[in-house]
Image (cartoon, rainbow over all chains, first blue to last red; front, side, top):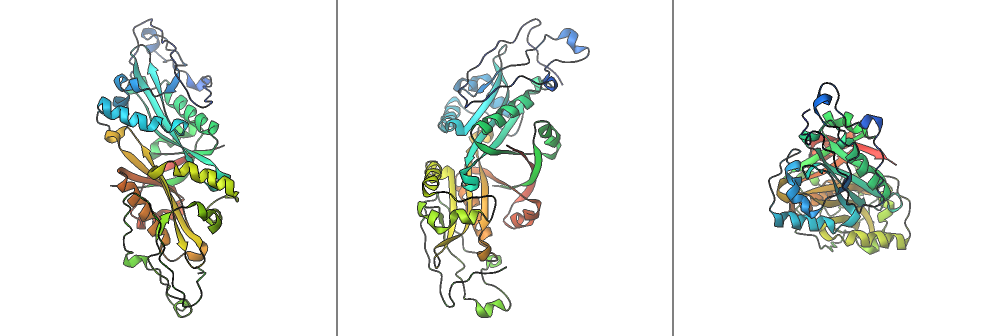
Length: 194
Length: 194
């Protein structure tokens, strides 16, 4: 996969703003190496393997957050005011609906995102379920295992919030990816489109 | 399926409390007949086929709401205070998280329920998705198509809230039921349990 690398020799800065609820950003596993292999290694700079995962910020409208989502599904541009309105609605839910992102500090562009919302239930003694949605990594940043890191972060968030499980729906061809993230196939997803 | 019928000749009263957002309670279709067929017809009273669907109320703790959920999954009893706390948390979300119920006005017991919560997104021009959860009909009231009516109500709620789709996850053996409710199979559901 192509990699939009920062200028040769540039280092990714560490940049983190987060008010998440006890989300532990675990060190990347050996399987999580962001380094490219083979001949590319010679021409590409080393990329930090621990780019921070932080909460979505209102300034991310200018950092290509919506454009990144358009790599996932139908996602036309939003005006600044539309973005701010939706951002406020979600922010008002606090830790019950969190969108996390990874920023490329060199380009200041958002290169990965995923969201989780916490559903409060009456079952299981008044438990909760975490729902993972809208996980996408920029085409330019694939192969760095950012997807796995984002998903782990969302799962950690749900666990810290007291959920007894986390669920998501995905196309069958992504089953293997989510199995690597610790998920198991459970049910079928049914949909009605309007 | 067994039917815990009201005393012979009793009529179900119409009872409705609802503050839902433009949820139209459509008349039941021919396929939605609550009447039993065959020999049971002779010994069972006619049951109203339009028992109202209303929002969960705080008094439903005493009407067997939690016990009904225990027919769906692990659901130990909640104290009144635990129930009230969770009820308040969900109620504070307004139309974004609604639990609907059907009450048997003769026994004043809750005999069917289902919930829907509205996820606000940035995709599709800042659209929304409705998530249907925890649909269950009391064993004593199955065969009356209350499940289909509840699901239709939840879908109507999501549509009125501006969702572009409604999703749910179910065991494969319930696929046919949800197809009758207008759903199509779309994806696989993946889960992590803690």
